[in-house]
Amino acid sequence: PPRPKKPQAAEAAAAAKGPAKDKEREEEEEDSDDDGAAGAPAVQLGSNIKEFVMTTIPKSQQQPVQCYIKRVRTGLQKLWPYYVLYSQDPDKFLLSGRRRKKNKQSTYLISTDEKDLSRKSDNYTGKVKSNFVGTMFTMYDSGGNPTRLQDGQEVRTELGIVQYDRNVLGTNGPRKMQVFLPPTDKRGQREVMQPTRIEDCMASRAGKDNTFIKLMNKTPRWNESLGAFCLNFQGRVTVASVKNFQLVDERDQDRIVLQFGKCDDDTFTMDYSYPLCALQAFAICLTSFDHKLACE
Image 1 (cartoon, helix red, strand yellow):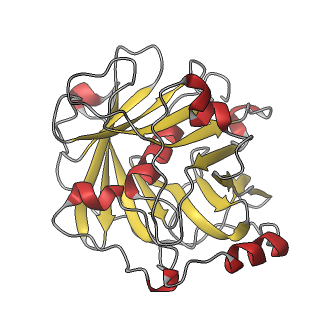
Image 2: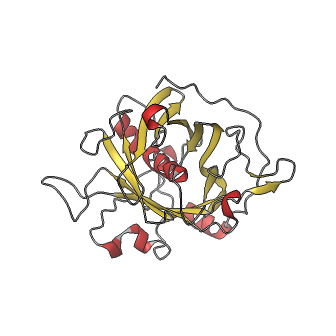
C-alpha cells in the first residue's frame, strides 16, 4: 500500500477526570527508587528496529512515544486486514501484525517487516493470543512454546496479559479492560518470565501476584451534546469508537501509560510510555481490533 500520511490533530473530546493518586503507595514507590534511575537515557529510534521495539521506555522519559497504526484492508486483505505501526516523529515503519486465518482462537503475529509475517521468518518478533471467547489475551516474544520446542529454540517470554470484562451495556457501552505486565524497574529493565507450567503463567497468577504492574482503562464520561462516551485525548483522537481507550497505572491514575484511538476509517493513533515497549503497546492495541464474543 502507498505510504500513509500522519494523522492530524483536532479538537479534544470532553475530559474525563480520573481518581486521585494513592498517596501512601506513591510514597512507598518513591522510597524504593533506584539511585540513578532519574538519569536513565531516553529511548531513541535508531537503525535497529527490533531492539527499539523491545526496549521499555524508562520512567524518566516524560514525553510519550507518539505513533500511529494503519489498517490495510484492500483487495484480498478486505476480510483479513493487517495492521502497520509507524512512529510519528520521525515517520518510520516499526511493526506489522495480522490475525492468523485458520486458528480457532485469535492469534496475531507481529513482525519487523511490513509484508513478511511468517512465524518462520527472522522478522517474526512476537504474537498475542486470546482465549476462546476473546476476553483474555497473552503477549509473547518470538520464543517457542515450551511443550513444542525445536532444537536450539529458546522458551518464549511472556510480555503481559490483557483482560476484557463482559460488556453489560452491549455494543454501545465502553469496554472495561485491564493489563498485567511483568515487574519492570524505573530504568525499564523488565523481569524475564519464561513459564513452562500452566500454573506459572501470568494468566494463572494475575490478581494473586502483587509484583505485577497493573494498568486499567480510564473510565469515559457520557457527553450529552455529543451523544457518546468521551475521554480527553488532547486532540490525538477525532472519531468516537468503542475501540478507543486510555490505560493508566493503578497506582498513579493521573498518568496515561497508553492511549489508542480512531482518526479516520483506517487510521489510529497510539501513544505509549513507561512501563511499555512498542511491541507490548502494539499488541495491546491489536486486541482492541479483535471481535470479542463475550464483550460485544
